[in-house]
Image (cartoon, rainbow, N blue to C red; front, side, top):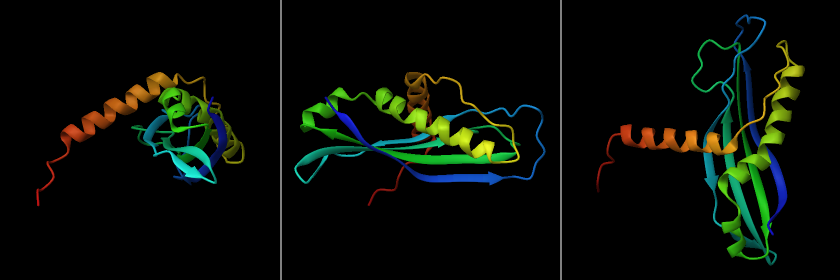
Length: 146
C-alpha cells in the first residue's frame, strides 16, 4: 500500500489589496494545477511526486487579498504498480487538510477575519479542474508547426 512520505508547501502568495471588506469574505477555492510526475527511484525506493496549485479566489474580482499556494506530496511505493492504486481525487484529499490549515493560519495573523474552509469534495474539485483545462485548451490558438 502506498504511504505518504512528505507533504511540502512549495510556495504561498498572500497579498493584501488594501481594499475594505464586509463582514464576510466570499471565496472560491479552486485547483489551478495538478501534475502527477513520473515515478522515480531514490535509494532503492520508488517515489511518486505530485504537485498542486490552489487559488482561494478563482474567478472572483474585488477581493481584499489574494492567496495562491502550491504543494508537493510524495508517496513511497513498494513498486511502480502501486501508483495505479492512488486515484487523483484521493491524492488531492491528502493535501486538503494542509491547505485548510495554511489558509486559516494566514488569515488569523492578518487584518482579515479568519477563513475556515468547509469540507471539500475533491472528486468535484478535480472534475472542475479537468473541465477548465479542456476549455482552456480548446480556446487556445493552434501551435505553429515547425
